Every structure is written in C-alpha cells, then in structure tokens.
Length: 253
Image (cartoon, rainbow, N blue to C red):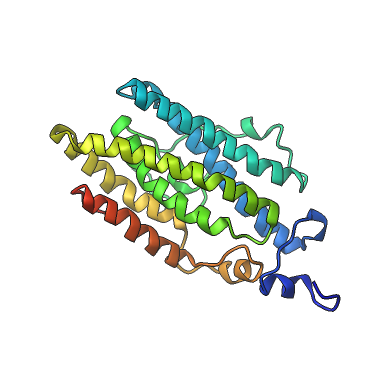
C-alpha cells in the first residue's frame, strides 16, 4: 500500500489485510458481523441436524449425518479462531446460546435476525423428520456453496483462507444430501412428502440471502468484504437449485 493511500482506498482497489491491528473500526464491525453470522449459523445448523441422526433410515445415512454435524462444528471453530484474533472469547462460545432452540414451524421471520444470536433465520425453523432434513440440507447446501464462494474472496486474508478450506467440505455436504434426495424421490410413496418439504424450505432458504436492497452492501463492497449483491446471489441459487429440482421432477418454490 502506498504511503499516501488510505486503508479505505486501498481496500476499494482490491487490497487485502492480514493483521487485526491494521483494521479500521468500521471494517472490523462489518467483519465481525460476517464471522458471527457464519459461526452462529454453523453451530445452530449442526445442533439441529444432530437431533435428526437417529431418524436416518440406514447406516450409510447415519454416518453421513454424523459427518455433517462434526464438520459443521469444525467449520465454526475455524472461523472462531479468526474471531479470537480480534478479542472474541471463543472458550464460552459453544455454550453461550441454546443452539438447538427452534421457533414454531409456522413462524414468519423473513430475513431479519431473531433471538439472542446471529444465525440466519432459516436455522430458527425445526426439522420435521428425515425427509424434511434431507430436503433442507440440499436446498441450504446449494445456498451455502454460493455464499462461501463469495466469502472466500473477502479482503481479510486469514478469513478468506479459512473459507476456501471450508468450501470443498460444505460442497461435499450438499452432495451427500443430493444422494439422499435421489434415493427418496426414487420411492413413489415418498414423493409427496419431498414435494411438501421443498415447498416449505424454498422460501425460507431464499430469505437467507438477505434483503434484495441492502443499505450495507455498498460499504461492504468498498471494504472488499462483498462483491455480489444479495439479489445476484439469490438469482444464482434459484437457477442452480431449480435446475436440480427440475431434473428430479420436483417444482421449485
């Protein structure tokens, strides 16, 4: 960075930071929100999926579910280590919120945060059995891949590296979910339940991308913490997830 250049200008031109001491206060606030949302969502998602393991129909499915729970918790820890560099108390993080807590299945939350943590709203809804969990994992797995591809380019280098390591593992989680979904739709008796779960989870996963018009986006983009708008990311997910559902003879939305 040139001596006469501000950090803000440096970031706006594609620069990266790697030392917490060089981070401006507003940048730090946005970075911490991004990390907290990811960690809280991974812990809540992992806790919710853990409750469904015993409903898995076979050993292979149970192993896959256990793996997803374990690795999502590991991903939360990876990002918490970056948060610790900014003074976050990660020793108490795993227990300071009731990660298994869920609201009523018919609650209307929208994209806003609810409760005492920063999890995405989709993780406040309960899973209703194995089929429902598989569908949610498939739709949210496709969303997570798109979101992580965005996060892997953040301008804070240690966090970008963490997300780049997490991305292929989360991609595998989505693939495991798709294997389970294909098995379910092959059974004519399960198709109605699958279709009902798709109809339930589609709008709730869509809300995880946030409001189409975000007042914070331009600032985040200027800091190099975001590159694509919420609407752009949502459109990519709708195309990607919609194509998969169409292939399986299911209707999106």
